[in-house]
Length: 263
Picture 1 (tube, helix red, strand yellow):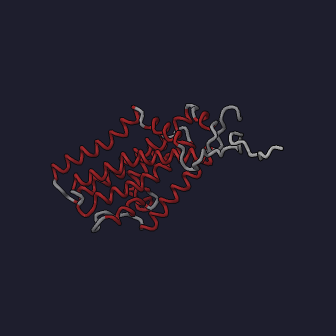
Picture 2 (cartoon, rainbow, N blue to C red):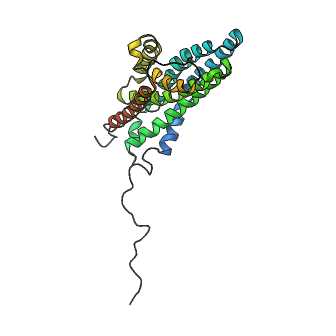
Picture 3 (cartoon, rainbow, N blue to C red):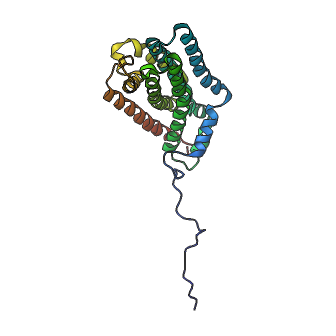
């Protein structure tokens, strides 16, 4: 009589693997493909061009005016935070998923056993990383060039740019999912709302990512050079709400797209 017990075969097929691929928020293959798409030649030129322009202008301004807190504040808010960052957000946020949806390549990714929420979260993390690298770091460096971080203005705008990068990435990633004209809509939002209305119209300032981010950044500065139209609690809550809701809705909308063969 055999004494060998009937052990399960470790090579036998077990329960189906979860669609998340292990991590519910990050998938390395999706991240690699997204980085490759964002850092392609055409987008890379645009991503590098704006920060280089900021640094070049900052050097000339410093040579012409010397170290001045007011000039540094005007330059960092007027160009880095109000103009450069939203444009970089459009490039990274919409570029993380919009082209794949437009040319139909997204269906091949959706056919893989990966949760669609994982796809969105991964692409959001990549968009945030790219936007941070090309906006927050150059803004910090420009601040040091302009006034050697006097009154911690460079740090304040570096922080503001970093937190705004998260919200902008979520907003523009959502646009990339919900409309085929994400770049156009994003540019209108960035150049009209954030750059003009968000700076000049008092009532609209409370709905500006720029002002929410300034509320956070102002806490890192000394004195009253860096200011915001909203309070710190309002800024933090609105930044978090926009990021979470935008990410959730992008995942929900992506879940309505069906890969080839399921329709």
